[in-house]
Length: 391
Image: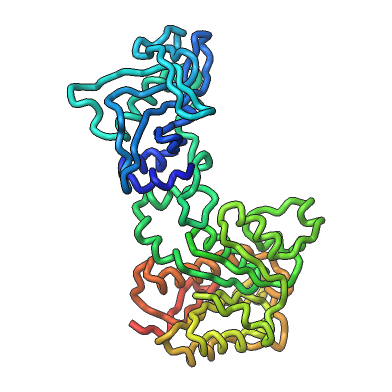
């Protein structure tokens, strides 16, 4: 079953955030992968469980201080059975049955909440196991947990809840993002967006993912994968689809005839190297009131060293979009040194980070003290310059 009911419960969300493998099975709270010591003085794994009732957003225990354990007789590190373990069978579900009832009452009032009850029994069982093998853990992590039903992830985002950012993340939930171009910066934009609960991310690119792309892209492509010559959208959708469920692809070049690909977008990142279509795309988005960020970089070799600028342009309803459009360059008369496939993945990553940070400020996730529509980063001076500020 999904862990979503637990995620809404204040006490039990702490168990999920700390990495416990918790779920609700047949009206029982079940915590799997609990290490314990057998009579043979070896480490094994069992489960803890007890009956509960899901009441709204709360989990209510249907027992007192007792809990049931599935496994062989739990012991101390010396193989001596624990005195609190009493043989008592309890069927949780058709495939899950406990063999022992554990009883350890901390005081007259019992345990103050579900978290304290579970973790107290986990400590009792797992500490002897840790004495034999310090690498064992009762908190295997989010990979053992199912994601909340309304989030587009394949496993739980425990980082946001630990940092107290769950409420702030609401600004991402209805966002339908389009990334046009995955040659360099676009891949790093995707890398960061895939960690947010945006509803969908549409990838648009018609090119193949080749060796030179691998040295500009996030992650590390295998040689076998490069030999397959996947399309860029296929490669990135496979990579980030392992985390985010909302990634969709269009393997084609965007033209004036297929601008309808952008119809459902709530925000667009224009990250294509070829500037031929940029003005057409930008003008279409401005006309329809769809906010977007255009990114780009110009790199040149001067005295055997590279210099240049990274650029970010934001257009959004209510801003100086005429000024923003004027900042978007047309096709260059000559290719610069970046276009000659100089490998500057750090600049691609920085350009993407600045763009995604600006998007988050636009949404209200980050505080925005400038409201700029145009920003440049100078490699030579290490300066960021903001222009077109609205605040």
